Length: 481
Ligand code: NAD
Image 1 (cartoon, helix red, strand yellow):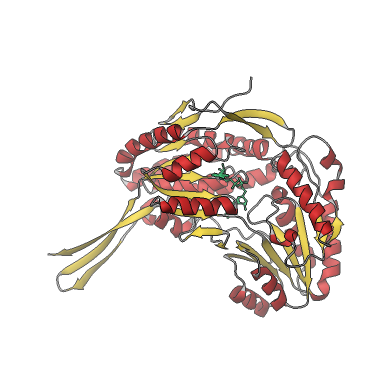
Image 2: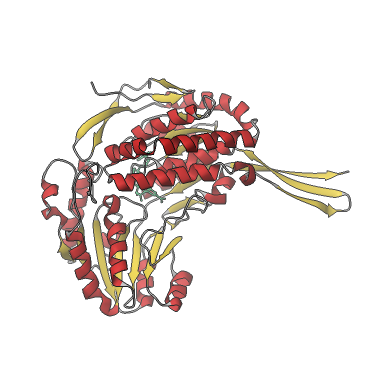
């Protein structure tokens, strides 16, 4: 019997009131591994009432005591590292090595949140005028909701709930309905670490849960990570309901390669950035912009390196490239490959021809287009799959201009040995996370994850002190003695 997942409310498993469920697949085998309930607005309300009650005592718990629960949680996550990584591979499809790295990124968020006593500190000025002093005190905001995507079932929820909870809030998570399993273990382990019941809750489902959260009057803040149209919708709707919102969205990241770049390093980094996690990363490299005469050798080396990648079930040793998440996503990817050919790009490596693309599991081999031009759909749209475009330009200015024409502005990378190129790139590129001689410039938990343009809606980013600002509100006290 396939297990039907339940919601986690008040520190226990509670059946959803929903009659409808959705199948959860192992994307490498197409096996159904669970049924996820499509919970209702009533389920959301039940979680909110529980969270609101738990918030009263949790927000009044001294910050060092809250932090101690985070320390214990960190220990438990480390002890369960392999189990968590296996779950990520099973429900998401990424290789075990990538999943292991993802768990690390999640644990780092918990480590950052455990610094709550320092992070929550306010500020004072003892003499704003004669005998007048002023001080700023920081408090949690209340019940907070988090809505997360399928591509990082561990890391992305960990961008949100550990810090929100360390800051004294109660949290309700709606994980992706395509990867709901890992979140359940995160909840159980948090309880084991000593988190009081009701401070962390999970409501499984899809649109109805999201809308229930966006409209709920007792939810003060919403953190969202997912695709661009949904991020825009979540930002608008939650704002209209008077909530603070941070909505991290899609991407189309450009990597510029200068003729003086170390080509072996460049190829290694680009292959990992474009095809790691099957290209299903918001920091994936999706467009390489080759400047000047580096283009021919770079394209040739990328195609050769892509030929050498092992495609298969991420749970197996030595596999680099796992499946994409679902059959419709594979179909969409294949349509983009056809479209690229119709648009006149040169298909340098065709991932449809790889043996794995024909068998069980949602596999698409590494695909590379050369001669891609700004304005083509394959240049413009986030494909979110192992499909890499190469564009050729003559100068760094043209490369930056092409990258800046994208609607998205999450990350951008430059490969060069020249410091003045680095400076020019840093000063003129429109993107929030830059990499120099590396392929995936994802900041660590103590820095903000800072996409620009249509890659982000809101003002305070996830993680770092931005995250602390987002999950707290301030009281200013001015006193005369
Ligand atoms: P998605 O937008 O389909 O889903 C994200 C969440 O929104 C899920 O929990 C889903 O249930 C919910 N949702 C989906 N459609 C909805 C709708 N119409 N109304 C209400 N809720 C809805 O995204 P995904 O496919 O799970 O994840 C991939 C996307 O996430 C990519 O675009 C990727 O770039 C983006 N992403 C961005 C970042 C970042 O930091 N900017 C990080 C990871 C992923």
